[in-house]
Length: 124
Image 1 (cartoon, rainbow, N blue to C red):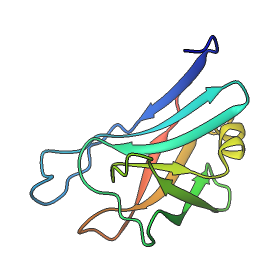
Image 2 (cartoon, helix red, strand yellow; image 1 turned 60 degrees about the vertical axis):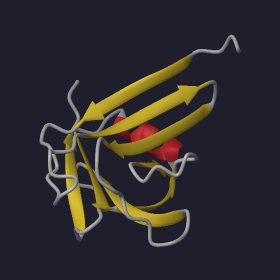
Image 3 (cartoon, rainbow, N blue to C red; image 1 turned 30 degrees about the horizontal axis):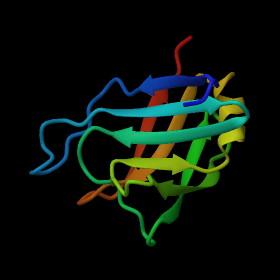
Image 4 (cartoon, rainbow, N blue to C red; image 1 turned 120 degrees about the vertical axis):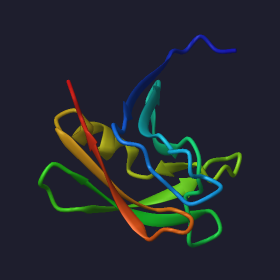
């Protein structure tokens, strides 16, 4: 155990995602920022379903803040290989932009679906 403190900030999507069977009960989704000392992680997760990754462990997606141009960022799957969570690259940049943004958009591909753009409204 260490004596450091880990901080979390989380944004939950207001609407559920609806997939085909066997993931048809309505998935919740959220964006989480985790900070421990100087290390920052930003990850997107769903309660059920599968987030598709085109290569073995990493891929690229686009994110957007407010009305700015989309930013291409790398993402990786979680260390437990759960296909329900992806870790976004450029975490410090995302952290900085989240502090002042009102809207965050991420493009994600799910199993049996094409790209879906998810809107997360940032409330203060």
